[in-house]
Image (cartoon, rainbow, N blue to C red; front, side):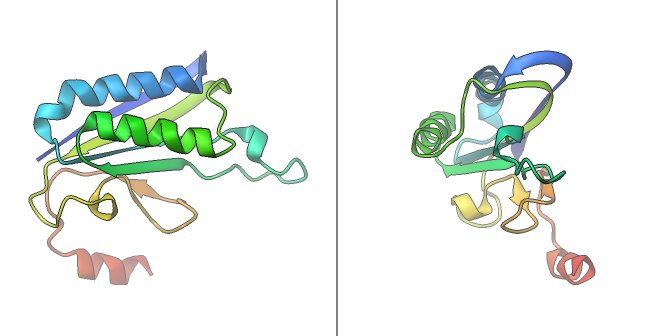
Length: 142
């Protein structure tokens, strides 16, 4: 079982700090759906993007074993240790959050969602349930 929450603002200016608070509050309301690990993904700041490039930075992904408050503490600790600016503003932004009750695989960040396509986070997914044919899906994705 799990809880999935998404937040999208379109043409409404919001600070990253506000976006994180909305995602965390959404997870808190869903914590009864899963309490052993959680994760979120948010858009990265365009300020980190190379000014000579048209590329968009990959999403930021945070995953943590434990309850929602463990995730919150982990995210803010990582933000302090990096160049992530909580005051960055986004006119359009998509964020997704997931809380997990482990039914398959141990409670651990690697089993928490969002699951990513790799280090570049080009593709993210959250889901509810067990994907029993994951080996076949991996073959088709390569």
